[in-house]
Each structure stands twice: as structure tokens, then as C-alpha cells.
Image 1 (cartoon, helix red, strand yellow):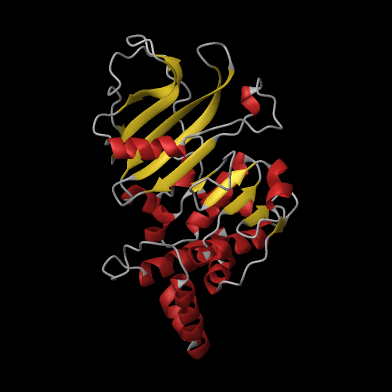
Image 2: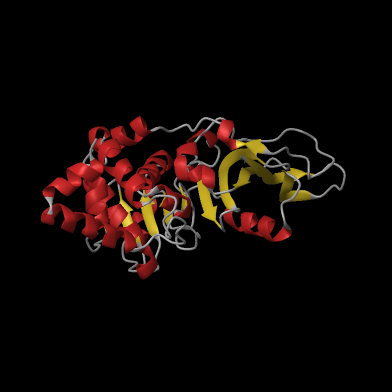
Length: 322
């Protein structure tokens, strides 16, 4: 599965003399409307509490947006130092547009800091449409399940993961952002954990940003931001806030699906229970094999599973254990 690529940064185009933030290169075939969508997703500003000169301390913004099964946008925006005039604050954005099939097996959050991301482009390009397609299925995701389980097991995170997954289940009804105040790397792991707990067909629908300077306006379901913003956001009733530094989060209604999934979020139970349940209840020939949203239908499924276990304890063994 190959994806079309897109580079954006501040530079001087040698042929036209145009300077400033602009598209530097992209693969052929990116429609103007899709380019406009990408342009709205890539904005990056250094957190105000960090030294703008210390590029290595600036968060990496892995972001993912879903426009449809053939237009899944995975991008990485990161600080890259000075612009063409020597001013600090430049950033480089690298986006890849793919079909959703890859992300059912490898959720997009697992590509956090993967080796294929371009941090800067030093090539002098005469043509903007000069980038080859990227075969993402040949690229190794930087995160794996062991990273996720180690993260969830530490520092009392399991209880927070449950409430975060509850918020995801209720996101369509609440119509508000889910904001995580934590490091960019930890936000990537929170997102990866949630993705693993969703049935494969639902995983491409989970949009996120590991860092955004303006979480209120960011067009993603889950938005990571720096811990300094927690005090500003905690009184905003439209936001579900998970402050991972202080181990606090907004109140949220219980979710039967979150209870089931988080209980199985550990190596010895995940494959035998959750993955087997996904294969059994979300078979490819089901009418709901291609959902259009993450919502509380999954809660109904969890309640159905629980009721069957109560009515017939042997049913669980026969369906979800080898």
C-alpha cells in the first residue's frame, strides 16, 4: 500500500524567489481540496514554556485525520530551527495520504517517530510534484505492543486509560475535544493503547494529535498538549481533560465496553479475549464491518457479551478462549 507524500516548510523557492511557508514538494495526484485539508492540519508552534532555540526539546506532533477510506492523512510536524532569514520558529511538516486498510492492523499511532519521517528537505527541487510514493507497509512502526503494555502498567495509568476510553466511546454524543496534558511521547502511547482496544475496523476512525498548540481548535478527537495548559483548560466543560502529570481527569459516565476492554489490556488476556472477540463478533461479512464512527454501539456489544456470560458461563469459554 503506497501513500502520496507532501512536504511543507518555510524556505526560498529558487526558481520563483518566493519565500515563506509553502509546499516544498509532493507526490503527483494530490487534489487541491486534499492539499487544503492537509494545510489546515499541519500548523505548529513551540510551547511558550520552552526555549525556542532548543529545538531538541520541542514536541513532535504526530497527527492523523480521516476523510474517508481512501484519504487517511498521517502527518508529522516538528520544529526545525531557523527559517531562510535566520529567524527561529520554523517547522517542517511531512504528510502521507493512504487508504484505511493498513491502519486496521497497524493503528496510525504506532508510527510515532518511525524512521521514514523526513525532518527537513535539503534538495533543491525545480518541480513541486517530485516526491515518490511511500510504501508504508514496508516501514517498521516505531512502537509495538510491549511498549503499550509497559506504559499502561506503570504509574496507575490503567484507571486513567479506562476513563479515556469512556470519553472516546461517548465522543459522538458529547461533541467535545478529548485533551491529554502529557509529553508528546506519552500521548502517542495513550493513543496507541486506545487504538489497540478498539475493533480493527474502528481504528482508522480515531483521529489524534500527539501535540497541538491550540487544543480547543484542533480538528482531532484526541489532542495532546503541554502540561502548562492544564489550568487553562480544566474549567472548560466542553473538554474532557486528562491531566496525566497530576493523575486527574474530568468526570465521565461509565462505559461497559471500556470496562471489558481495559480489563483485557494486558499481555496474558489481550490475545485470548479481546482479539478473539474482535474476530468472532466483527467478522468481515458482518453488515457493520465498515463503521463510520466510534460510538456507544460498542457499549451495547459489551453488554450483550456480559449478559450471555451471566446467562451461560460456558458461553464465554466456548467463544473467547482457546
